[in-house]
Amino acid sequence: MMAANKKMLDQEPGEIEMLLPWHAAGTLNARDARRVEEALARDPELARQYAVIREEFAETIHLNESLGAPSARAMQKLFAAIDAEPEQKPAMSVRISSGISQFFARLSPRTLAWSASLGAVALLLQAGVIGAVLMRTQQPASFQTASLDMTDRNAPLTRDLGGAAAAPPHLLVRFAPDAKIADINTLLDSYQASIDGARGGLFRVQIGDHAMAKADVAALIGRLQKEKIVSLAVETP
Amino acid sequence: MQVLYGRHHVRVFRFGLRLVRDEQVAEDLISEVFLDVWRQAGKFEGRSAVSTWLLAITRFKALSALRRRKDAELDDEAANAIEDTSDDPETVVQKRDTGDVLRKCLTALSADHREIVDLVYYHEKSVEEVAEIVGIPENTVKTRLFYARKKLAELLKAAGIERGWP
Image 1: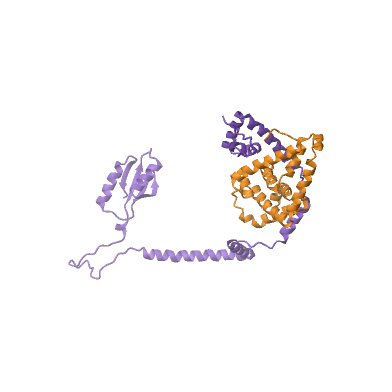
Image 2: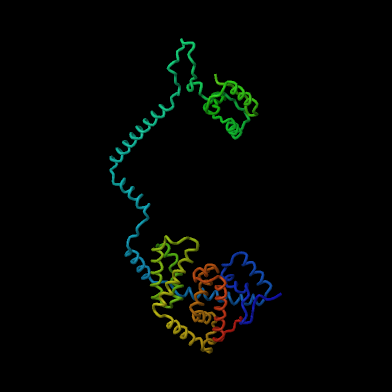
């Protein structure tokens, strides 16, 4: 086996040989440390060089430790220099948030309380206006032709597009006692259904978001009743 | 800053002192180093250890200080002064203290060699960290330390100490 130690001065050092100082200092990674350990175990020349390195290592630490420590002058000089430094400008975002904080900090507690009350009133007013607008837009889109008159048998009949008939169907469903929540969720998803109430073990379930023909509702109930986790499904009275 | 200073200032001082060989200059160095750290704290990316970052700044500051003081001449003078005492084999043999001679020879190494020996042995820096601090490739780090050790062996041999390597 070729020795890792290249004794000739004019030869390039071996890879493991060059790693010995780091092995002595304990700063090699686990893989390299293992390679060096193995090489040391099989190569006495390398082991001899390693002993020399450990001596250098110890004396370098000894030498550096003997250098002492800086005087307090260095620290005084540093902190005097830091004090003399111009104030560092924080980032724009920090300045803005700091400005907002300072603005509110300047307000008295009474002013702040009044501001909060006014803010709450403004929010309520805003909510009221939005609610009113929504209510107006969600009213049934029913309309009548000017000619509708039930006394006029020959007059054409128009269909009411809104109102109760447009409501999605609601069913009462009882799930099997061993039904898991995950299974119930999967079933509800597959029927585009949502639970909107419960009483005595029965759940009030809305199917979809639009009206369905009676026949479709009946078919849907039939399908539901065949589901393993459903023990009862009936249309709400 | 006080915590950072308290934790690292001695090692920064010693590393700087070994490079500039002047206590006053080394003390000025650590003030400059930590002031730079205070100014540039936001630039520290955390990719390396804080000590590695500090030593890299220290090295840069030390080299700048050496250039300012035309310290190359002083460096030679210091080395010659040490070699003068080491060149006297009788004195060395009388001392019979290999450790003492070894430390003297470590001091007599060139700045490049002193620096790499200190970083690896005293500051316990890995190959990668030394490469980052000194700004040289990792392979150069390994070979530079190898040749620093060879130079050390030569100095020891000249001082009458044979260690069996190389």
